[in-house]
Image (cartoon, rainbow, N blue to C red; front, top):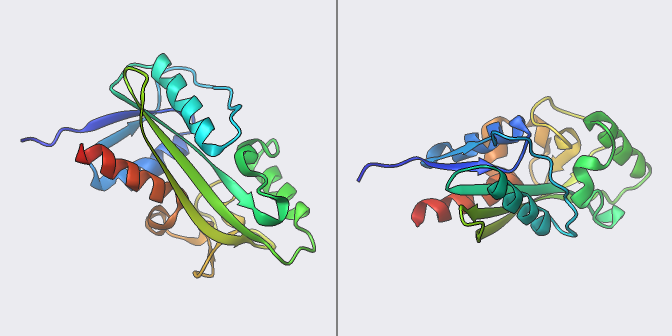
Amino acid sequence: MENKIIKIILGTSNPNKVREMNAIAKDFSVELMLPNCEFNPVENGATFEENARIKALEISGLSSGDYFMADDSGLCVDYLKGAPGIHSARYAETQEKRIDKLLSALKGVNKRHARFVCALCLVNKKGEIIHETKGYIEGEITLERSGNNGFGYDPIFLVKGLNKTMAELSEEEKNTLSHRGQALNNMLKWVTMR
């Protein structure tokens, strides 16, 4: 039987996220796509999982297709009791200000353990949640930025055991190790095995 490409509409307006997720999905018969509509959901869940569900369910009602998926991901710093957490993208107005605010909050702090978390939710065209996955990567927050790859908090997240920030990893390394890579690989295996 011919391998059919499974198209999944992503509940995001971030083209970087779609590009990164398609790079992770390259070995699967799956194409992840931006929605063809305005998408700005109210992310009022208390957890990454709840926010991923909110976004996946909302995009399934706004766009046409067979499958809809959304992720919610962020950085959780132990010293800050899990902050910025689900507020990672809204921690400050810009990417640079978010990094500055986090480094300032950790000024003089030695215990800088953190983890990136990604929750994914897949919804069918009937608006039913059919699968959810989660991925993590452990590390710590550096004292200053290092590296030019990636986006978000990548330049200040030192990957455990690698002595490199996420922004110093090649795209292939990041896609293999990252929280999003783990969650998406698990999701795509489930989707393509059905």
